[in-house]
Length: 138
Image 1 (cartoon, helix red, strand yellow):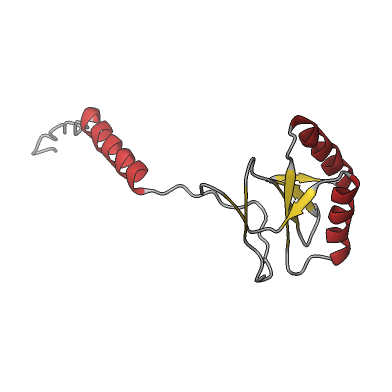
Image 2: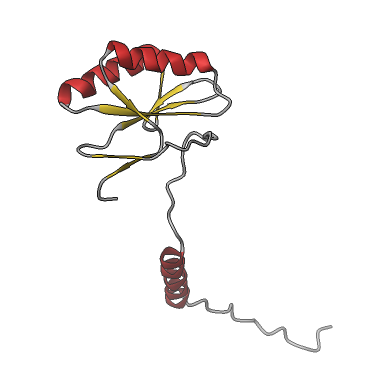
């Protein structure tokens, strides 16, 4: 025996246009308020140096980084082996007259790895600058 009649509920209507508007406003807000940072691909601890800054003219130098673990060598942000680094440096040297490299090494990096880079630069007749080089106009 049924004394009451079950009323059929209407499903609540979700207005998608309003939700899309809200999501768009949130997306724009997050895009405007967020900051974009270039995070380094290699985390190194540079030793302190009193003569670490030097102003140079011309093209900025290529940054060669010596890390503590494999791969030990980086040219700008590109991890390379020593032979690949040599070929890349030769190519860049051929493309530019005043090609220089800036050498930075982790404080805990093996000194032998740094010497390999210095020997390579000497064999290619490259000028090696300290890590904290500032180009004119920066």
